[in-house]
Image 1 (tube, rainbow, N blue to C red):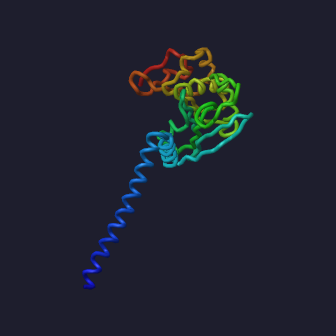
Image 2: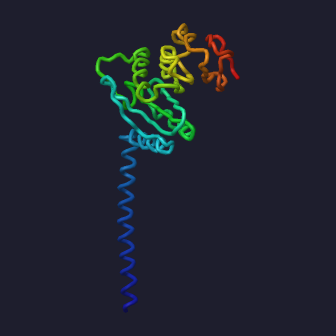
Length: 222
């Protein structure tokens, strides 16, 4: 009789636990579907955080002249600063940063008005003004001998900064950049010791100037 009483008891206990487990799974699935449908930005933010963390990047904030800067920093060695493009953010560079933080100090800002570097009311966020703000930011986080690389709009801003502050940078790079075609007369002002490179939109490889004086027409695929 005792054995017959024990077996139903364990069955009831097992079924009760399975019901609880099923209810928990249903709640988790409902939350997951709700997040996916109504708050996908949470998923994106989680993915961005994971990628930044795996790249060894930490988030920092800085306020300069009333403008909030939010940026990633990580690694050690010579400084490379990466600038995102139009409608982008610092998170666009996290995978690239993961390949660099072992040998370089990486700084990746959300440019003012983008990402978490929220805009200031009535401020001008055109490329020239962004380059001027960038100068103040660089003075605080990497004042000398940095490598400055920009994608798209970030390349435009990087080129303007490099033309105005050639002594502050070791190199400037353009990746699919708008900067190469913008106000070309400023480019020859960059010192001849500065190496310029950009990604070729045709072949996907790096294009280097055929000599260091960098006339715009001398870009050749290599």
